[in-house]
Amino acid sequence: MSKIYDVIVVGAGPSGIGVAALLQQMNCPSYLILEKEEVGASFLRWPKEMRFITPSFPAQGFGQTDLNAVVPKSSPAYTLDMEHPTGEAYAEYLDVVADHFTLPIEKGVKVNQIHKKDDTFSIDTTQGSYQSHYVIWAAGQYQYPDLKPFPGAELGVHNSLIPSWQELEGDDFIIIGGYESGMDAAFHLGRLGKRTTVIAKTNTWELDNSDPSIALSTYTYGRIRHLFDSDLLRVVGNTAVTRIEAVSSGYDVYTSSGKVYFTTERPILATGFSGSTTTIENLVTRGKHDEVLVNDTDEAVATTGLFLAGPELRHDDHIFCYIYKFRQRFAVIAETIGYQLNLDLSILEEYKRENFYLKDLSMCGERCQC
Ligand SMILES: Cc1cc2nc3c(=O)[nH]c(=O)nc-3n(C[C@H](O)[C@H](O)[C@H](O)COP(=O)(O)OP(=O)(O)OC[C@H]3O[C@@H](n4cnc5c(N)ncnc54)[C@H](O)[C@@H]3O)c2cc1C
Image (tube, rainbow, N blue to C red; front, side, top):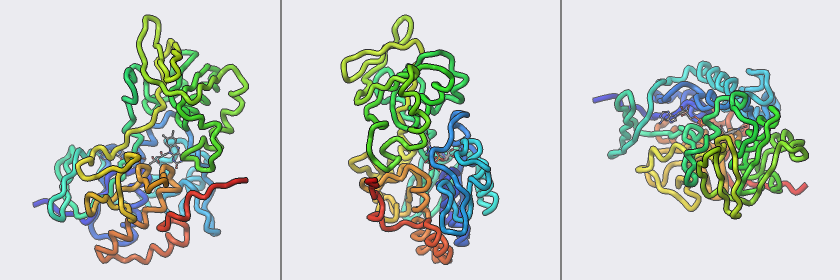
């Protein structure tokens, strides 16, 4: 019979690396990270020009850790000499962290499905089957774009599949979706002197909300502000795209307002991600926002021993789609597993001191009125 690991972590992005670094520091005797590509693979796929929205600033001894760090006392700003890292640079930071903690990562292993029998998970992968008592699902969203948000969407191209805005041919584009990805596309195309029409269900650029998971981040707004006064950006707000049809010289984009927009270039879909948890649908139940239902230690309600780390995590109205948010739950997961495995939990004191441990969610969601 094959070895049964204590814990298997799926994915070597910020979530997988961050939570595994804790298992390592708790001296977990047998755990493994399974990664279908390489460390930071999602970031290596970012369009070349894309940069972090959340700024990195060197961590220092005053209890202010870099917003994009995945372990305390580390800092992408310091490691990379960048305030807004590129995807490629951030993958390098994750590699440095993985090397520092000598994390056991098996690369090129794609998890296809997971089943649980009694107290053991069987993890079927492209390289055979693995077994463990706990699974931490940290496979992210970025590599699972929503490619079918409406009929005819296949005629467009999802923004996550564009390697570089510079290489895109054409001068006039329709971008569907007005959150960070859509506005980032508009910014980069505008810089190249190309015109864009952003069609968005929500006017993110007008929302008065301090949470960058809901309103457009200040970084992005600051970058596109000047485009609003130019003829390079047209925004069509409070409007849903209902379908795309190919016509002889281009594409007709139909909208909820009844208006049809024509473009000669493939429309750009900035319509978001369906997420990786569809791979483990047999082990989860979902709530009213389609989120995986978890208990207060991020363990799937439907399957004991299965934990969710990363941007798909949601507790009621609390959305964890930034690293500075979801990293505060790594210690909660590790504490739960570590307690059951009788591991050394003393490292958690440091995580608490460094604001890397958030248990009481009533502390979040504070809205600034100034
Ligand atoms: C436009 C845009 C801008 C963003 N900007 C920011 C920002 O400024 N700040 C911020 O904090 N966040 C930002 N984010 C969000 C950030 O990218 C995600 O929160 C982050 O990537 C999530 O980390 P993760 O480790 O959970 O997932 P990922 O980084 O996606 O890592 C998942 C890993 O799992 C692997 N994997 C996937 N499926 C499998 C499988 N079946 N088997 C094995 N391995 C698998 C992948 O190869 C990948 O390496 C942005 C996202 C987008 C789309």
